[in-house]
Length: 145
Image 1: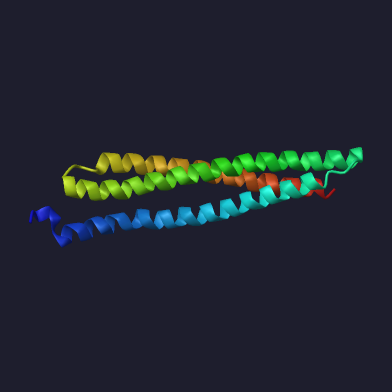
Image 2 (image 1 turned 180 degrees about the horizontal axis):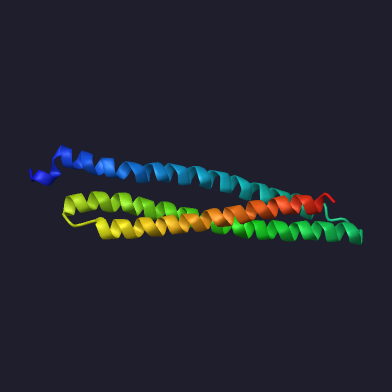
């Protein structure tokens, strides 16, 4: 058995892969929160559409809230997409770490490149998530006055 296929070499790769795996767990938790928010947006949209009244003033108020819900849905959808892409890139980092050990190639550049991209995409996802939250809190203040 070649030296690089020893249990010690595999254990070292597993040690390197632990941090990205924890990151995947965190991204999964964020995705859970985001999908819950998306579900609530969709539910609220359905309720409002069923309650559309005939008075012009009430229609305007509900249409404003529906427009805000639509924008919130777009932000959270893009946030979920970016988070999922980030998770896929981190998964690729873990796979490349193992592949590099078995195929014997230097993984520093591809792993570094993919990890940087994963972090940038995750930052974009979190910014979009923050925009959705800010829009939600603004919509609450507007709708109650």
